Length: 192
Image (cartoon, rainbow, N blue to C red):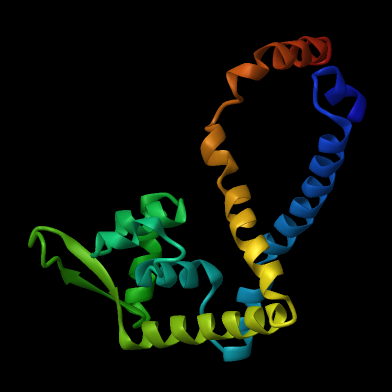
């Protein structure tokens, strides 16, 4: 990889950092996909719900530090779908299940009586609060050994890293057009 990237003008030390960062992120992604912390919280609390339903409840509750759209005020099924990046029909099905299980309720919008909004019931709010409390107990305990300088460095850098795809967009930057064309040409003999 170092040789390939050096041909395209990427410095070797930058490549070393990129390779190390990619390995860390891939390991992190695998752990996050397992949803270890959420699974543990649901199990420890003895909750009869799965993680997709928990996600929907958190999207309804909409903590401002997790969802940019939380400032919208009222939450509709479409809002939940957008917050979670899921299909609106899936969000609707999960909301219907949560309503039947007593975690959520439908209500009439105070802003537009033609709209139906979704709110958490007292039971749903209690579940979200308990799960998030476990999450922050564990995360807070883990971070308690870190210095203020480490935390002050990590948080903004991690946030910056999390936004790199937003800056990039859904396609590779035009400045890599030639490099991508060369790679595509090299692959063409295998794709026929």
